[in-house]
Structure formats: C-alpha cells, structure tokens
Image 1 (cartoon, rainbow, N blue to C red):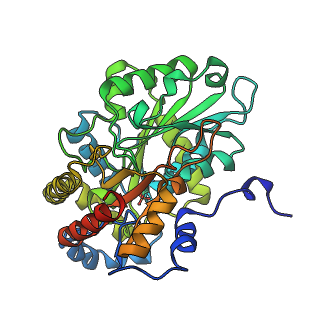
Image 2 (cartoon, helix red, strand yellow):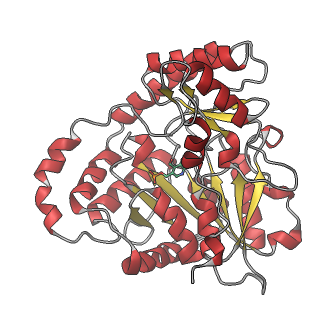
Image 3 (tube, rainbow, N blue to C red):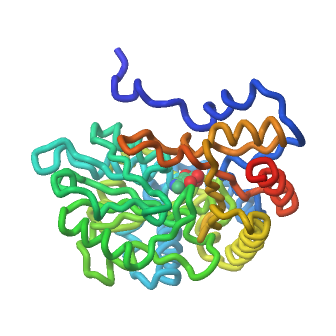
Length: 392
Ligand SMILES: Cc1ncc(COP(=O)(O)O)c(C=O)c1O
C-alpha cells in the first residue's frame, strides 16, 4: 500500500539526536549548538515593508516571483558574481532552497541516462534533501566521500567512467555544510568540465555563499559562463536564510539555463507553494541591500577568530573557510556528543547523522558538527566547555 522507496530511510538527524541525548540529564547549563538556525538580527526595516504590503495576503502570489523580485535577484547575481541573467527566463523565486533542491530532481532528472538507471552524485556527509530528491525520482544516490583527504569536497573527478555515464546530476554544496570548505575556481572548472564531458547537470547549493572569512567564494554560474559551458549545465540555489538571518521567511531562488528554469516553473505551477506576495516584496528589498550582509559577516568573522583561539593547540582542529559550522574531529561522534551533553550540557550533532555508511566506512563518524549561531559570549562558553570536555 505504501511506497517501498522511502521505507529504509534512517530517522532524520534531530530525532536521532534527541533519542541519543534526552534519556540523560544535562551535565551543565544547556547550550544548543546543533541546528544551523541563524540567530543574528535580521534587518529591522523589513517590518515596515511587511505592514505596507499586508493587502497582498489577499492575493494568490505569482508562482515564478514578481518581476521586481526577479530583477532584484538578477541584480544581486550581477553585482556579486558579474553574471548577467535574464530575469524573465533564468531565475525563479523559491520557498527557501530546500524545496528547490528537491524539486530540481523532480523537474530535471530523466527517467534513464544512456539507457540505464540514472545516478545522482552527492557529497558524503551531505544536506539530507539531496538524497530524498534522488530517491523520489527513483535514481540511485551515490555518496562520494568529502573528507580531510579530499579537501572536504567530493572528488567526483576520480569516479569511474561506467558510473559517470549514468550520472544525471551532481549536487555540490559550496561553502559546504558541514565542513565549511569552499570550492575553488579550479574545482568548479574541473567539475563543470566533467559535467560537459558526461552530460550531466550540476546542482550548486550556494546558500552559505555570503558567510566567509577571506575572499568571497567563487560561484558556479560565474565559472560556467567563463568556460562557455552549456547554459543548462549549472543550476544554482541561493537563500535569504543564512545571508540575511531570515530562515523563517522561507525565501530563496534558483537560477540557471532557461530550459531548466522553465521546467522547474512548470512543475511548481502544478504543485508548488509560491512565496506569499508581501514576503516577495520583503525579499526584493533584502536582496537589494548589502549593508546588513556585511554586518552579519563581520559577526561571523569574530566567531571564527574566537573558535580559532579556543582550539589553538588542538592538532586536528581546522577552522572553517566559510559557513557557520565547526566540523571537529573526534574519535567517535556519538560518544563525543553524549559525553559533551552529560558532562557539560552542550548539545552538538554527531557527524554520522549527516552522512551515510559506504563500503569505505562512514566519513562523518569521527566528527561532531557545532553550530556557531548563538550570541558570541554564549558561543564562547559553549566552545570552551566542549574543548575542555573532549580534547583535554
Ligand atoms: C546546505 C544547505 N542547503 C540548503 C539549506 C536550506 O535552506 P533554506 O531552505 O532555508 O533556504 C540548508 C539549511 O540549513 C543547508 O544547510
């Protein structure tokens, strides 16, 4: 009566974490460092826009986004990456990137690739929607380790030709959740070149692109344009959740070739839930403003410095290049998370809850993920408690 394809899914990371920790009392003041929910302030001025635009709740919103929102998005893409996209055909508003990353599979992955079951590549560990997207279209999810040895990004170049011939799409997250690694121009060039050779699409999840230490991360669209790649080769996903501390607004976008965007629009015209009109107006203003993004980045840069200071001297520590997670090596992630909870009250996520077992082992098993979203002082206390508990 029910589909087989979802029956073997492991429990989602957070219920698993509750099952691991909640039977035990906290060993100190409870500090949440598990969920990547931004806590810095969002722009206060959005409430004026919301109240001005309230009457829009009385209308069905446009599926693809208002022309003004789409123009704000292509304007931002142009300023940020130097790429020029047609706001009428090459971008679409999303209800947050998660649904877009899912719907990309539904709209774009063919039933067969070169006569075989299509394969969809994803890094391991990975943002969980990539896997469910693949499973939903009955493609094979292929989990490619993203470990210290591979620079914390998946080495798709090393995959055998027999597999690459079946690949319909490759997800890539840069900056990466959870490791904070950033794909270089050379990495993107190789990956897009591989996708050109084997004719698959690159689904680039760039939702952490505005939170970084040094130089702004290179974007996939920018490299694809420079290479003269097929216009539908790369599909990128961006969000206001992390850039602007608005995870509850549920606003993001997808951009890419006109054919890909048309297909996603068509699917969502039937089945999607467009962003309410007043929220589209807010999103338009937020994509246009950069001052709050710079302030937000400065707050994270302080946090990187504090984390580096606290973990200085811990040999295995590598601070993130971008994003807001620490990916800390430990002997066993579950044991470390349980120890941190029962001895200090700090809640962190075992790395293996974000990764899958493979023939080569589970690349998340020897890690914990720590979200640096709490206010600075709270974060500092949490990290010190964690360090003293786990590494001393
Ligand atoms: C890697 C990654 N991609 C996508 C998302 C989805 O973000 P949203 O749907 O809020 O845009 C998240 C959220 O945590 C994420 O970590």
